[in-house]
Image (cartoon, rainbow, N blue to C red; front, top):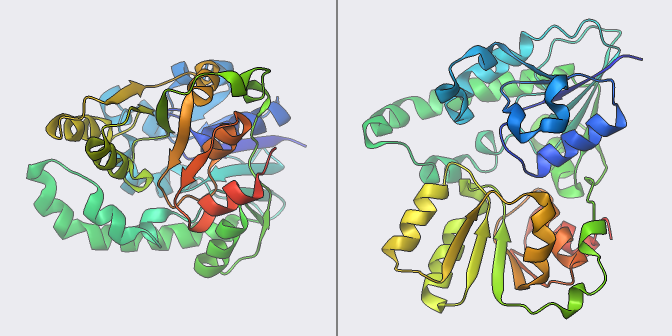
Length: 318
């Protein structure tokens, strides 16, 4: 069979990107289609990446793919996948919005129904920052844009032959918003680097959080809490909210908070094994990083609701 892999975007690394890399390893001959990509961040996939027409835009537009949001559904529908027997999409947004022929099978590994269209729309609207000059436009166009994208998103589910959820929590969301059943297959977690001998003997000097700097990850809670506590905190990751969180830490005079930026996977085990605790404040769909922390023998302080609870209590992958 000819297999194609489709991802929402591949601009930086996170849990969804780990899943795409695992799919790429499982199907080494499959090309990988995505809206926009930064091949430098995925050197092992460089020759397999295929962008939509959005990839031809200047880099300054592609660097913040969030601004391309209105164009994602049509960009994915414009992909020519007619030469493939099976399409596997890894989606938390519009990678599932594909043109599929009757003889083709489309398996969607769904990380969540699109957050800002359903359960977290109010949160995104209030927390997602835009420049001052854009605020009137945001107020004017937010509701009609979300309504259009919801219609496009739900229409995209009709192309899906089989839904796979990354947790039972997300499977419930898929039923609630798409009225479709999903099989739960937990995401891949490579625990081997974190189980190295001697991990438990490492001195533990700081608290740690790792992830994308986007609103629902709630790094703002950590910055405010540790500004008051004065305890050493390291935050690893990049994203559109990074500069805002750095500015907040400066405003609060929180010199105890260190922003590490992008940390390669090879350097993460040392961060985990020297942490007093791993912090996970988001209501997450699953949560790969708590599994990595526990594999390192590091306790997890997490938001006790939803998918975050499922990943921590199930101990999947260990």
